Amino acid sequence: MSVLDSRRGGGNGNNDDLASLEAGLDALETHLDTRASRWRKLLSATWPPVLAIVGLLGVWELIYRSGVKPTYALPSPADVGLVLRDQLSDGTLLEAMGTSLTRGGLGFLAALAIGTPLGLLIARVRPIRRGIGPLVSGLQSLPSIAWVPAAIIFFGIGDAAIYAVVLLGATPSIANGMVSGIDQIPPLYQRVGKVLGARGLSAARHVLLPAALPGYVGGLRQGWAFSWRSLMAAELIVHSPELGQGLGQLLDFGRSNNDMSLVFAGILGILVVGIAVELCVFAPLERRVLRRRGLLVARS
Amino acid sequence: MTVLEEQRVTRSTGAVSLRGLTKRFGDGPNVLEDVSLDVAEGEFVCLLGASGCGKSTLLNLVAGLDRPSAGSVHVPGGRAALMFQEPALLPWLTATQNVELALRLRGVGKSERRVRSNELLELVRLSGAGGKRVHELSGGMRQRVAMARALAQDSHVLLMDEPFAALDAITRDVLHEELVRIRESQQLTVLFVTHNVREAVRLGDRVVLLSSRPGRVAKEYPVGIAHPRRIESPEVARLSVEITDDLRTEIRRHGAH
Ligand SMILES: Nc1ncnc2c1ncn2[C@@H]1O[C@H](COP(=O)(O)OP(=O)(O)O)[C@@H](O)[C@H]1O
Ligand SMILES: [Mg+2]
Image: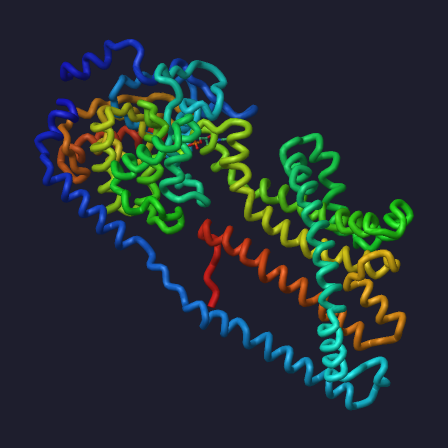
């Protein structure tokens, strides 16, 4: 007796029963997504750091009042606030932030353009992995300020030296992120791609790269942090009147004039840019990648 | 033996034909040894064996994911579709996109992909869940998407590697019914791997028992039970008892030395 004959006897009622049973099972097993309201979340994320900063300012004020250091070495929070206001209102600080951000951003993009294919090559080509792989991971632990003297001798004082240091600082992180992203791909996905008929380029595009994305995004985030640090190291040392005035140069200017308030204002500017880029670019990017994959564990 | 079964025996080349298939990994012992098996066009064959006996290895060989150490695999209709043992949907894609990827890699055009993936999701009764991501789907829904994706490969041969092993009994029962329905409407040839004797009898036209270490065809059982079948029915139970006894005998051999 064949399947076809007997099944017709079953009729349509049977089929509908099955459909409704299945719909019930699906409904029972599907999680309901409950998300706290955005504002409440934002609020509860904001007040602890605000409280910490207020506390920190308090401690600073106390130390200032105790007089352990002369005022030129340790200005009060209010003094720094005043300098900050002046710097902001005459545009010096904002201009320096803009200059540095542009340099950091361009350097990061260049590192991205070099680090990504380099990472792909290291991950996929065995001789390259053996040869260059350890070198690139080693470079990641080299403080990029070590490149500054070499860059100055090679390129002279100028933007090229600054960009070279940023590039050397950020590229290894991005390449390593790509490598670890690819290494972490479950072998199952590549077999799925193979069964579905993905070959070469289409396998890279539809399986390999999307599967490596979480590790890669982690590498980008770290790459940005390294770009920013390397840039500050470079700007502190590489400065001349012809060059645009970045935050690092502002710091050095403050130091040479013994102007602690200006130095503090510069540090604040560096922090603000670093945190802003992290919060506005990398944190949302990473969250998005992880949430799509169901890898984001809700923390309350 | 019914007329239909006699026809199957006499037909020479079927949808899948394995000859003297042997597989070992590196210098290890033979995992599979001299397995010969023909699956006829439109037949539903269940491969049954203890875990570790080489069932997944065999399906990988049939799917072309691995090469045999000796012997031959012949799938005249071209590449076979494979449903993996683990839920193997790509987590960065939605249910619809998972199905569409299979179509896309076959070179199906964009508008036709839309239409076809909708049809396939409807076939597995997931029309409403196409936009969901993998982690938002239950285990049973995932396996149905995986089934839709396998069907999107448009192969007449469907290989299934313990696809329902991780599901609870109620869901599994429903999916058995779905599989029988889809197999009938799509006129599929199915090679279904399981270690669950009742599942094999519930689904198959024929059950093939594999021995362990090395894996060989130990015995075959035609299942002459009319559909619709139920896993609880006395006919299914009767044959299951017979096969289970043979399976136990087979497993005991390994404890003897
Ligand atoms: N890639 C591999 N390399 C080495 N041994 C393997 C590999 N794949 C499977 N085996 C071995 O082959 C045997 C059969 O495995 P498998 O086909 O997965 O069994 P089953 O699916 O029946 O549980 C096991 O002993 C396993 O250790
Ligand atoms: Mg297996």
